[in-house]
Image 1 (cartoon, one colour):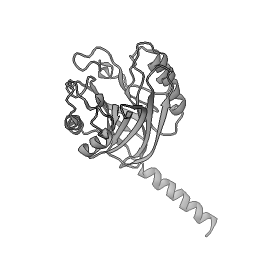
Image 2 (image 1 turned 45 degrees about the vertical axis):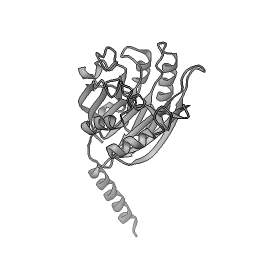
Image 3 (image 1 turned 60 degrees about the horizontal axis):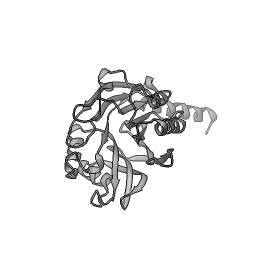
Image 4 (image 1 turned 120 degrees about the horizontal axis):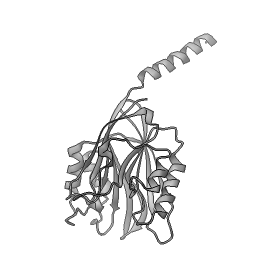
Length: 260
């Protein structure tokens, strides 16, 4: 085969690839599920799944997730919710707890192409935390990195600051368009959020800064949806949905367009 023909094939292939790259509209949710207990402590997985099914997100970051603990009746909560919502599920352990495990999870309408669980730093007496890093390939062929996390809850920011720095170090210079989603326990003027927004952005939409906790009469904004490469994301909608039975947190949901 001649060199000219090879170059033509390469050029033609690149052109086709670029032509095929299309925008994706993604509905993204952050949902602290209170280890399945509900605010009435009646352990209602059908209600949790019903909330997700009602809003039909493509990607969900779940916090306070139990995996085969005694208090969760030995259920694998990510798998159970995945079955009830017909979504793929992944779990990331933050710590062993109550004869099982406790951590984060992701539900996805798309199949996963990669995943990693990063243990986040914490003081010796503090509760361990994790970041579940997943990659999915959308129906339009875009590879999106979706990160679910739950940062330390204590009043002092010491652990959260360490955790935010670890996330920025691990993900700040990624080649992938990335969504960082979860219960960050970080208010808008906190040092923790300032660190994260060195590399990640939150939409200025007014609703994005509404209170998310507690679910009844929320007064503080601690649940967030952030993204990198802001020039490639268009935020169509950002909602704070306060359903005060399923969780003590409001659900946060955004509709974004990714522009490759």
